[in-house]
Structures are given as structure tokens and as C-alpha cells.
Amino acid sequence: QVQLVESGGGLVLPGGSLRLSCAASGFPFTDYAMEWYRQRPGKEREKVAYINGSGGYANYAGSVNGRFTATRDNNRNLVFLQMNNLQPDDTGVYYCVGPYDSWGQGTQVTVSS
Image 1 (cartoon, rainbow, N blue to C red):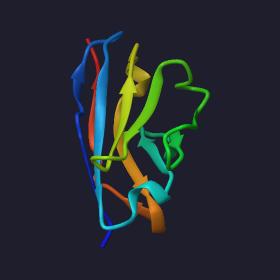
Image 2 (image 1 turned 120 degrees about the vertical axis):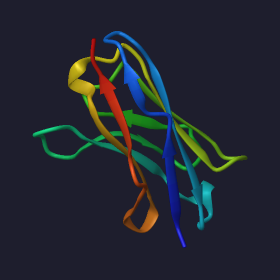
Image 3 (image 1 turned 90 degrees about the vertical axis):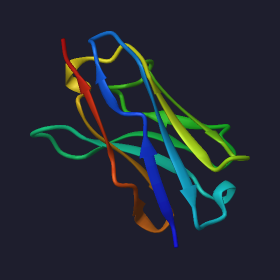
Image 4 (image 1 turned 45 degrees about the vertical axis):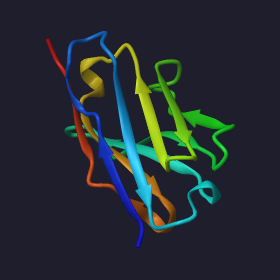
């Protein structure tokens, strides 16, 4: 079955960076786009990034465009979300999402001084 496991969250100062990882298994990885969502306190769940199966195309929510970058390593079935210039409003739980509406367990990102 599809399994997605995120890692890399943590506590970071405003202006700092984090790189999230998502290890995927149980499906033909290169055949599917992957997405990153986040759930911020008191706000609706939001898609922040999309990356296609080859990794050659990605797009982003306006709120993170220019700060976040999604990449993937198709040799290791990994997806990454590089997050730069993090701000307190980026605090939340970040999820990796794959085919068949599969979701990882989420990883907490906290941006605070």
C-alpha cells in the first residue's frame, strides 16, 4: 500500500530555513505528481507546492512562491520541500500527499523567536 513518511520539521528562527523530506513507497513513484500541503493554526488546509513525476515542473501557492522549492529524487523515491526565509506565519503541520489521496502523518514546523 502507499506509504508516505515526512521528516525534517522543527523549530527555526524567523528568516531561517528547513528542508522537509518525504519517503514514498507502494506505488510507481515516477508516474505520479506529488504535493505538499500545510495546516496552520486557525486556518484552512492549504496546498503549498506541486511537483510533477519527472521533477521538471513545480508550482507554488502565492504565499510561499519564491521562498519554497519542491524537488524530488526519483532514484530514491524521495520528495523534498526546501523552505527559506521562514516566517512565523509559516508555522504549522506540513504533509506530503501522493496518489489515491494518500497522506503522510505530517511534520511540525514552528517558526518563532
